[in-house]
Length: 213
Image 1 (tube, rainbow, N blue to C red):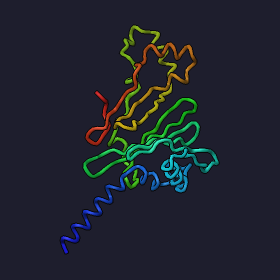
Image 2: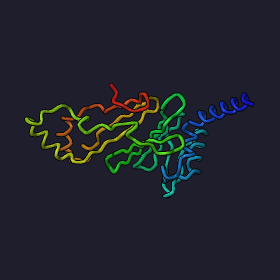
Image 3: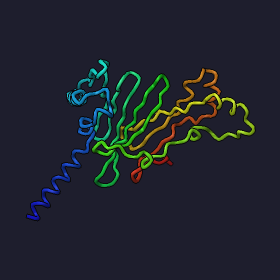
Image 4: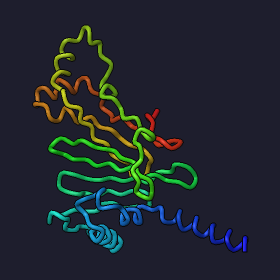
């Protein structure tokens, strides 16, 4: 009897781990997380991709949403022409995973929101998994006491807009400072002198994202 219960327990564990793939999670995702898509929409997207077809569906607003990429641990969904959703399945330990979800809206300048969920789609505290970069992380070192031009142009950049993107094949997040894109061309060019050329990259390590060395 004990041996039978042990075998059943092991099978349940295996099935639970097997269910932690992006396709299964995407279909099971509550409508509240991606309100534009119904469960039928999500199932159709998966079926279309599996058949090597363009995974386009009519969403709740009668517009087109497209599932552009789906792997065992990554998903990219173009929800509208100006918004997208990325998801990445990340290991918390040997048996538990969490889902990182990034929603990006470009209106017209892109800005992202990051959330974390369990594989049962319970929302988790973001602070447990990431500390977002400050705006200063995107700027080159400057002596604010002597560089008056810098102080003047920074006053123009009074909105904090950042686009976050996940990697399909790596457990990283890239942060791109998009605030300059809403400025006038001359102001944008002046500000660009003080901004780092490369995005800020965080790496998933030991159950959380931290700045990549």
